[in-house]
Each structure stands twice: as C-alpha cells, then as structure tokens.
Image (cartoon, rainbow, N blue to C red; front, top):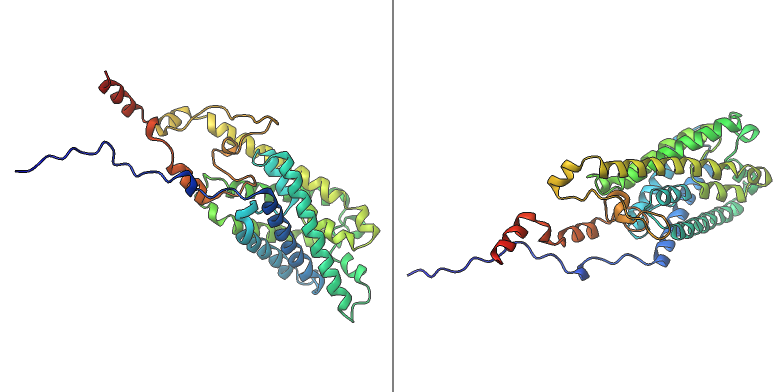
Length: 326
C-alpha cells in the first residue's frame, strides 16, 4: 500500500538571506578607490607622452591611457563605481545615480589622486639628467588652445571638441553600466577604448584630455600659461557631462512610463520615479536598477536582491489564497 504524501505548498527556491548581499563600501573606501584609480590614470596618461614623442606617434600614449583606465575600473571599480574623472561624476550626479554631497567628495578625491600622480612624475623627471627643464617637459603634455595648441586650434574649436567628446564618454559610461545592459560586465573595456579613441583625437588638437583632473595635474607643473587656460578644461567637460546626464535621465524616465502594457505583463511597476529629500532620484528609480552610489552595477548584489523578491506579487496566487481562506 502506497501512502500519499502531501505535496509541498511551494517548490520555490528559498531566497538568500539579507546578510548574503554584500554591503556597500563606506564613503572612505570609495574615496580611496577613486583617488587610487585617478592616480593610475594620470601616471599612465601623462607618463607615456612625457617620455615619448606623442605628436609623432600618438597611438601609444592614447592606448596607455585607455588601458590604464580599463585596468583601474577592473581593479577598484566595484568599490567606488570607477569614475576616475570629475566629468563622469557630474554625469552620474545629474542622472541621479549619486548624491550631490558624495559627488563633491568624489571630485575632491579624484583631484588628490591626480595631483599625487603628477608629483610622482615630476619627481621622476627631476632625476633624468638629460631633461634640464621639468616645467617645459610638462608643458608639452598640458592641455591648451590657441598658441598653446599643437596645430593652433582656437578656443572655440577646443571647446566644441571637449564638450562633444566628454558627452560621448559619459554617455557610454552611463549606458554600459546600466543594469538593463546585458553586456555591463564589459563596461570597463568600452569606457577604456572610448577614452583611447578620444585621446588620440585630443592629442592632435592640443592635448585635450576629456578629464578635468588630468588637465589640472598637467597644468600645475606647466607654468602660468597652462593654468590660465585651465578653466576651459573644466567648463567644457562639465557641460558635456551635463548634456549626457540629462539625456540619459530623460530616456530612463520615458522608458519606465511609455510601455505600461509590457510592464503589466512582466509585473514591473510603471510608477513615476521617487524623489529624495534633495530632489534627486533614488538609485533604483534612476534607471530601474540597484546601483551602488557610484553608478557601476554591482552584479552580485543586484542578482541577490532580485532573487530575494517576495512571491506575493503573483496576482493569481493571491486570488486563490483569498478563495481558500473563505
């Protein structure tokens, strides 16, 4: 005789406990990662052209900067989000991925890392006996326009290139780190290759860096001329980053509200984004993903939190449960 064993009410896999989700790193850890990553970017991005002739062979310097950025994002990007560029931080802040106070702290950490990298390179230059003018050597890699540009590009031309290039860079960062992007794990490679491509163009025009921290690092040791033109290499990238951040934010909001039928089938909410007390979008509402404060997706935490979603949202199950309770 076979005994009938009652079937279990549910065969769903138990979600992981909340303690299984790795906690978000603290602000000090994130700032340290941003400073270290920016130092790596500056040492490679300025060091290679300092000891070579980038005008005759710009590809090695551009590739070195792009590869350094990729390596830094892979190494510590999971801690801070892998900005290493004040323009990228501004774009993330406008897109609603990072709080304004944290964004300001990020930019400060990036400047510290960039200056430390420039100090290290300046110390190396002072030890080279064949280089008598360290300031002049730094001037060859400093960003500039007009008479300080390699091919005498006027201010308007450099401004346009900086705005356009930075907007493209920030847009690629925001798009490739989005949770809905199935290839977001390749974001460091996409951002690094984009940086290398843009720097090869920028070097031909006037060492346009598309990174205010790097521009500041090179200008500090290049003399008053570079410092006098430094303002453009802050204003233009911020404008480009703001454009990319606003466009990305608009696309995200329209995507969340434009297709209610699909959202109803998939069970995703179509509510408007929630505003924080300081007027920013929450990180989850900013692009429908669980981002860390910096914007680079934490794949492990996102997967765990998705698995932990309660099953009570199943309308059919709720209906039959109510029927059975009568």
